[in-house]
Length: 270
Image (tube, rainbow, N blue to C red; front, side, top):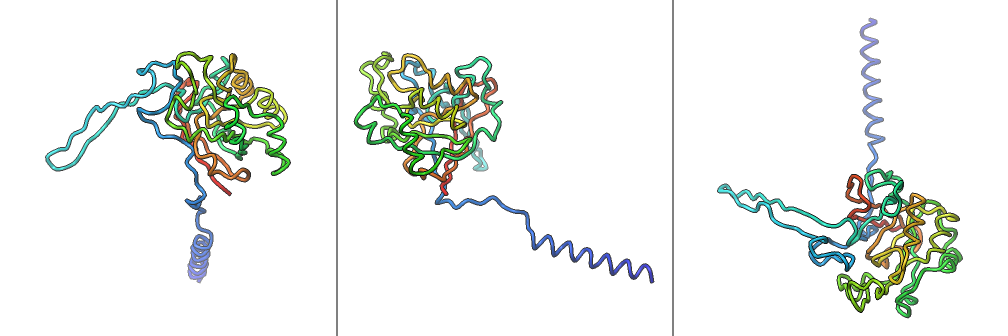
């Protein structure tokens, strides 16, 4: 009799477990495709790098094997080589700090968070050397609320429309004359405000540098690096990302001891 009771109890216990499993399936991460925004340029021979780099220091993709066997199966493999800083890429703190984290040491939670989009397209169109001001940040906050802690603040200057025309992106008279470069970015005072008073995780720009083209010293880079914040450069499609409520996920190549890395940057609209 005891065995029969145990069997009945076991049956009902198993049934309850099965019902619970079907009632509470493993949750799945799902985002509607119309909310996703690709914020990265592709990497190829047209990718924009700093003009002072030699051609053999930028991007190379060469074929190692490309054959079709007798059974029709194809086998292909290529060799990829590129500088850390070019195209859509990450600036790690170690880029401007000897004690800053290198790419592979940046915690994942420091590579994702809320996105704040400051639109300066009209101002940048009038002034190639425009620098995002503290007032621009205040104006954003008046409209949308306080910049959240851990946010990534992006400058949308519309510069991605020039990609990959290096002459229009840098506006140089002489490609090796860095003193002739003209493009917008963040003013160091704004960077300091965002880092020390809004506790951001990083900055992003659709231009080649978080410091503007005429910068003789790279103070924005230094402020970010010395405070464990990152920079995203040569970002695209910021006009497709909501000014508030969006999030970003950054996926750099994990280069050991890297000061930067090519970057996959994903935007998620609310």
